[in-house]
Image (tube, rainbow, N blue to C red):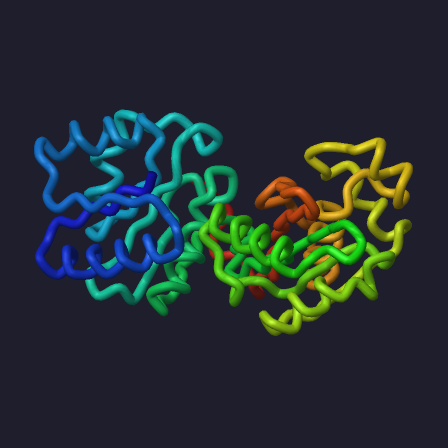
Length: 266
C-alpha cells in the first residue's frame, strides 16, 4: 500500500493527480489530506509498512517519523515532493527499502526531476523482460503473462528495454511477434552466457537444466540482458511467474550517474 499525504490545498491537487497516475499503473494507493491526529496516524501507517509519499517540507517528515525509525533494512520507503511536483526526493530507505525505485517511477509519471541523495546515486533504472516458452507457443499466452508481470511491479511496456531469452528460442515466432508488437529488441543468449547468472536465480529447475542447459531461462535471460545493457550488476525485480505454456521474469540494473551526491544514506 502507498499512502500519499498532503497538507495544503495545492499539495492536495498534486496528490489527487498522482493517485490517478499510480492507480493507472496498477499500484494500490490511498490519499490522506491533513490526517488527524497527524503524528499518530503517520507513525502508525509507517509501522504498518506502508510506502509513504509526502507533499510537504522534509523537516515535517523527519520530525514526525523520528520516534519510529529503525534502519534502512526494515523501514518502508519514504518520498517527499514539492507542491508543484517539480522534484521527487527518496528520503528514507533508498536502496534497500526501495525508495529510489519508487521515486524513479513517480518522477517518470509526473515528468519531475529525481533528486537522489544516496551514495552511488542511480538515476536511471533499466528493466529487461526474460521469457521462456514451449515450442510454437501461442502469442496470447506470452502476452497475457507479460502484461501480468508488468502489472505486478507497476511497470508499463515502455519501461522495458528488451525482451530476452535463450538462443534456442531465437526463431520462436510468438516471441518475435511479441517484441515487434511492443517495439522491443528481441535478444537471445547462449547457455554459457546465461550460466553466469546462476547464483542470482530465485529457483533452480533440474528439469529445465537437463532440457536446455540452464536452471532457469526467464530469470537468467532477464538478468544477463540487464547486466549487458548497463554494464552493472543486475537483480531480479520479479521472480519467475508462469502459466500453462510460458515463464516470465523481470530484472533491473542501473545506469550510474556521473557522480554521487552524498556519502551517507538514511
